[in-house]
Length: 384
Image (cartoon, rainbow, N blue to C red; front, side, top):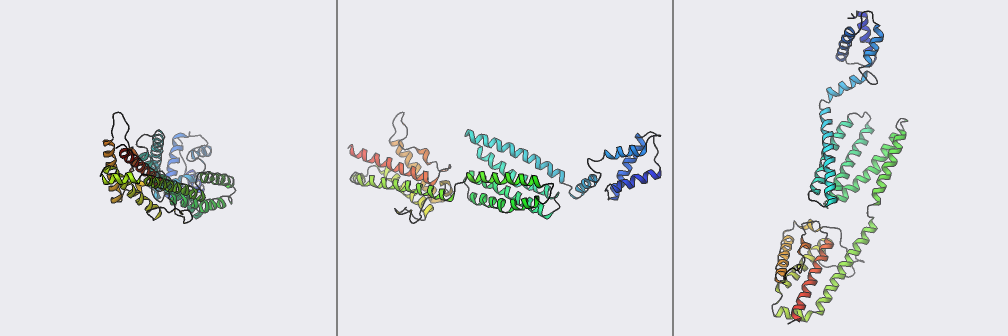
């Protein structure tokens, strides 16, 4: 067993201090630990300095000051490792649930939306904030903290915006567009010009900036341009106006028979279906354009149908009531025309508007129902 002298103890203490350990309590703890190791492991005639250098080297990877930095982290941020563990667990769970949700979505199995929404909620409101808190403690420069804040906020907005887009919830485009502008106009310039000033990070900064810019460029390629959106809206509106003209022409051609139906009080269910369809169409068109009917010169007046979804309007009590009444009337109409082993005269599934159905598709379905009812009434009266 080796016995340390006072001179050797002072040498160890001075060396520990010279290596960057400034906290006195930590110096004493390291001194006690090193002295115990030397006295227990070094032989009486052993080389003290050589053995000491070997022993002290086992306490760090690059320099001894790492111990004080780690101790400071533990003292100041007592929950650091707990937060880090929670972050890793939440990130792993969220990624697994997201993968499951994507699989369910591709296979058209139930539960896909719930899995995707829940996983993005975990990533956006637990994983990203914890990652930001842990990383910002490691940053010394205010510029680095600003870059980290903008990047984290943008990532949260993009992930939430994409879920809103998938679920057809409002403000999806606003969230995604704002996040993109934030990344391209704030994050990328600050990150680039800050990183290239440091020779150690210059190459990595340039490569990362190129990848980020290319990635955002590829994403923007998939986004429909304003001109393309206007063209699509014009085509949808033309399609609706054309259908309305066809319906009006069919009504005029068969007006005599329809008047007979009204006089004889026949086809009452069909007439009620026809009226409800008109009412629902007027409601949807008014929500989209502000008018109950689309004028013929809609293009010059910039009156167009948009990209709204019918389930956005189900909260309106009158609309929901009329919709349920329409489905009930269609079911009664199909029952009265039922034949063995035949499909329903009017497909009721087209009116499950609680699912994701666009306004333009709903208007087309309502037009088809009216045409079927009109055809049925004219055939029934013509055969008498």
